[in-house]
Image (cartoon, rainbow, N blue to C red; front, side, top):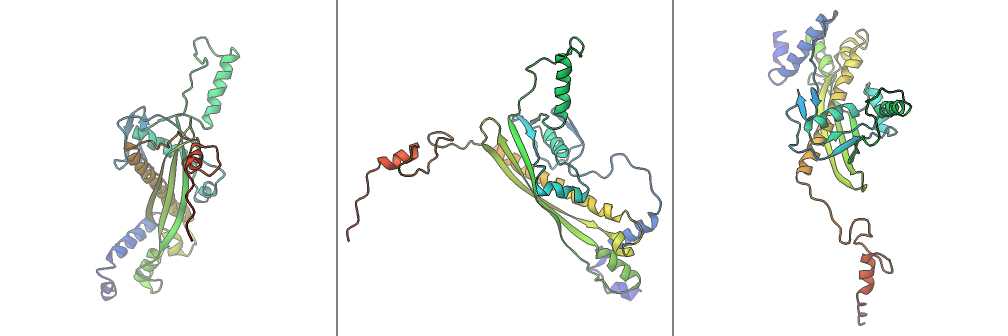
Length: 298
């Protein structure tokens, strides 16, 4: 056995140690432990209250000045949104709202399903059902200066494999089976920031992330017992998507710190600078006003 293991040292020792630890965890995992409060934190965690934040990731960008109010709108008809359910993942909006409020870059306004509750309370007030002094009169809702549109461009497994190979028996055969189930998850996401008054795109950012997961249950035991393995293997997929969105937001904040509005001669939406002959825009009239070029001599 010593000579057999020695053949894989030192380059393969990290894989061996990892797999041995996994084996130990599997053998000891027939029971369960009590949940530990606050364990298994993701990239975005903690809390936000007003401009204060608790437990936020130190890698996330933040703003000393709040830039305006923001509503987040997911395209629930997009294919990526439907595919979230394949990984037992829900909406991206709650984690994005937490991350953005922790950053202090925007004030989040509600435009989701909770808006129905807000409007119902106003109906109670209009129908004299609310107590006096409830203060649900008109003119109190805060407008959303900007809308943010999140999208997942790619999310999936992009590789995996084992330094031990799939063959062999004994301890190394077990190590090979375990290490062979190591998979790489990658995700690419985008965030778009739109000015609600003009419809102009203020900013766009792309982010990426990757991690590794270990589907050791199915690989080590031929897909037999320990049916929770599939759920465990999917957990890292959700974490890598959140990390990619955090990277997108970090890139956006860095760009917004140096923000300078785009301008077009003559004003936005008045025809642009790519005029055509005979048109009515300022750029077209400039083309028509130029003297015709003399014909080239043959």
